[in-house]
Image (tube, rainbow, N blue to C red):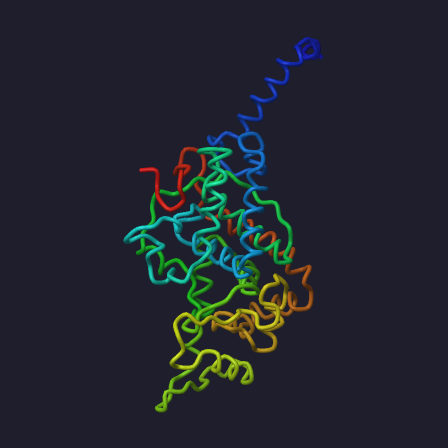
Amino acid sequence: METKPVIVSLSANLFNFLILVLFLFAASPSCADLSFNFYAVSCPAAEFMVKNTVRSASSDDPTIPGKLLRLLFHDCFVEGCDASVMIQGNGTERSDPANASLGGFSVIDSAKRVLEVFCPGTVSCADILALAARDAVEITGGPALQIPTGRRDGRVSESANVRPNIVDTSFTMKEMIKIFSSKGLSLEDLVTLSGAHTIGSAHCSAFSDRFQEDSKGKFTLVDTSLDTTYADELMKKCPADASPSITVDNDPQTSFVFDNHYYRNLLAHKGLFQSDSVLLDDNRTRNPVEGFANDQESFFRSWGQSFVKLTSIGVKTGEEGEIRQTCSVTNG
């Protein structure tokens, strides 16, 4: 009760100043953890600027959302969500052949340039990438999410770290569980986050292991878990002599819509990758696959929880890392 007269007696300007100091302290990069509205004071329009950039790029190129979502996975699974995949140069993550088909870099770079104009040295490339992937999901019909921010950009990006840390499309369930578990992600997270394949596309080489080339130079189906009609369609789009540039939609029905059709495709034995089909074949994951196929809202709820976990893998905060001036190079 004795403190009330002191607060009341403060001038309006002084009181507002103290409130501002408190907000600045709460939003300070020295904060040990991620927090919601991290840029509320330092760059209030940050999330709007990122979303606007993603929306504009996606309207010009509808493949952008899928590329941004995939880019996030490849970033977070290697060195954590620190935009290390953005760094260019020999021997970097980005230079590894496993990342050769990644896209969406220009969208992140574009958002960064805008933010550097209005809020120089404030918003990390890691946060831009996480926000852009989140927005990509919403823009394509998925759930609108709030995610915490405050990530710092990493300074380490090595090609040798890529292969041991990312999921290959030919992986078995055991191999996928091992990778996901090492990132603090559960079996439910694995099933949920695999739903990212409801948008995006893949090069023919990503699922060529499901076919075998015969003596006449033609593919034949060797993976009996795949629907034969769907397999025939894939072989027509991706013959043995197909150009490396040819791509196939992950979801043949609603390729640009974030929905639960991915799980419906699995039930119809039309999962594009071997790593998709094993979700239906394994007793531990079949039930959630069936649940998500029958209830899109259930998938969306689970997606919100798992996506936040994904974007929190190995984050750097406080004094760790840096805030890059340009996403493709460290500050030096």
